[in-house]
Image (cartoon, rainbow, N blue to C red; front, side):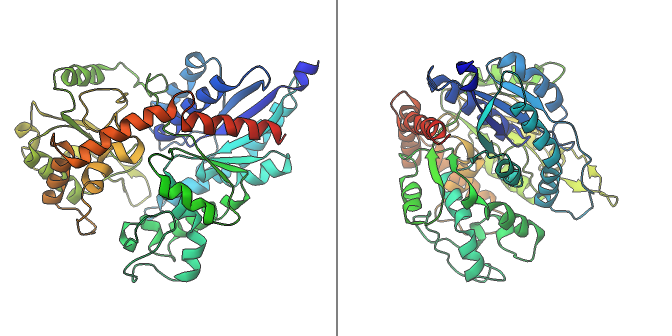
Length: 453
């Protein structure tokens, strides 16, 4: 009976996007691997599903319990989606949808606490869009933590949001430079997330709604490590009233167990892997902006021209920005329609375009010149195109010439950027090993979780 009373449960609620789900599962597995017999912590992941996400997600969710038997997965009952209009912002749509799951979420937590043998909920770890669940957790006496999927610099920006709102009550676009505590240098407002530029926009209001509640949290888990973002992490010491930050990155599913596998086979994946196997090590650029982002026709064309002109091998996950019809329904379009005429024929053999989000594991593939070295934004197109161009002018659309220059600065063998990326790759692996900074931070999180309950 004593052992039953000591059983503790940590509950995760990730966003229903692959870029959030897979890292959450990997984080849960790592936490379970470092808990010992004295802690006796188990983990439950509550799953919500948007009808706008990939149709393969339904089968993916159903497969998770058999792939990860050490984790309990609970799929919450569906809810009616909020009204979809032609001009609704994606931030508004997702936030309203997440809020509608509050009753189902409360019911799931109540059932867990009333189960037999009894379960003691020691913590709730939510995604950014589920901040409304903080109220439910408070009612049930459960401390709430945030799993922040981006990096420490972005977290610092969001913690600074209330100050930005006070200093620039209407818009930030008219200001030349902004000083953000977690940024080593001041930046022009145009590099910030688009919703932060117009404070009368619905998206900005939802940003304030979610990020304004960060100080109510017990702690924040962030996907980074001190060796990569020492400046940003150190900046948190100067901020008052913020929760404890645990740098637990890099959270990378090297084994690929938590990745989405498409229904109906993986023929395209197999063809891609065979093509990669034939390429020299470190010779392929991966261009990918995540499972939710989309590009305009102008952006597609500039990237295509830049990739072609660079002469380097590439693997490009194509995704156009969604378009809605007059009745608010999403109109599916072939992203290849936005490519320059004859582009795929001219790059055949050295370039591969994948429609939509690539549903396959890229980590550990030695042919990818940037991907294995860093993760999240750094390993994808943002790093190649923008991160390597410290001198580029900030405009709505980056030109093909700038994209070509950015790719060359990353991929050339004697490139300083490439050298630094490889150096950080080694440090990232050291951080994740036993005794590394990430491992130490995870253990501290477990200790705090147990001791505070």
